[in-house]
Image (cartoon, rainbow, N blue to C red):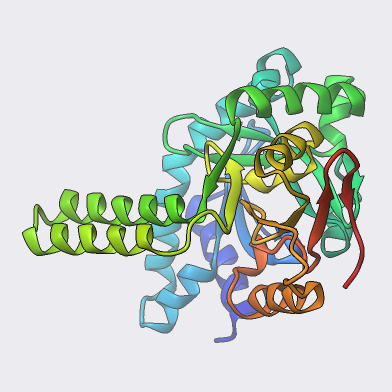
Amino acid sequence: MKYIEFCESIKNELQRMMGDGYDVKLERVLKNNHVAYEAIVILQKGRYIAPSVYLEQYYDSYKEGKNITDICLSIMVQYEKYKDGVELDSKKLMDYKQMKDSLFVKVINTAMNEELLQDMPHLNYYDLSMVAFLRIEDDGISNATMNISNGHLKIWDMDEDALFKDAINNTREKMPYRFSTMSDVMKEILYDKVKHYQHNVGNDEELDYALVQSIEAIEMSEKDTMYVLTNSNKMDGAVYLLFDDVMETIAEKMQSDLYIIPSSIHEVMILRKDKKIDYAELCNLVKDVNEKELDPREVLSDTIYIYERGKGIKWRNP
């Protein structure tokens, strides 16, 4: 069975199993960078919002031999797990005062999200757009987010300027920028992997020794050549490249103009601007990584931005 046929079969079987008290729909959900997913939406009568259940992983189970009925039962379990938390959010969603403190900003590529941006308030910068989102932290759906649409502004009777003022303030206060050397980031990744291993398996003297050796190797390598700019949450942190005061602080600290490398929507890498670095070659490297290595949803741009002290970002297509 082909994927779209599978999706239709799941929708029809779920509707049969759940009965007339529910409306089961198959929807195309558009994500960042025009990546789209097929999702089942189960809306109980009398409710106004429902969780989306993406079907790709269930299609993999089907290809491995799981039957349609068992897959539908799994989807129903997921629905029951999340439906009450989502309904609670729907009641709060009507009241801007309750939502205000959960608003943040992130940055996405303008051209790659042309369709998505048609229904979203946004601010354009270079080849990028700043957009607002809600961070949801209810039980069971921690770290879930929801993009702010033009419909939200109408419900709240809010204008775009006021929305972004609140979202930017929250971003600065609750997810402040984090500027680190690449070596510090690599050491942190190693520590996290070891902690995860120890939590699941237990202590291992050989692993501890390997960790020490790896950290020593990192510290002996060339220092302070590349830096990482993100936020305290390490998610959607690339937006800080649009904050002039943050970039000026970094440029002054490094006593140099800067190359800003858009490694993903979550972070950017910072290099001192050096005549020895070939700008076009650097752009080609970023483009190659974006095409071959990065999750398509996390690509930010193929462009290298130049920050000049006291002047701001200089942008040009490579």
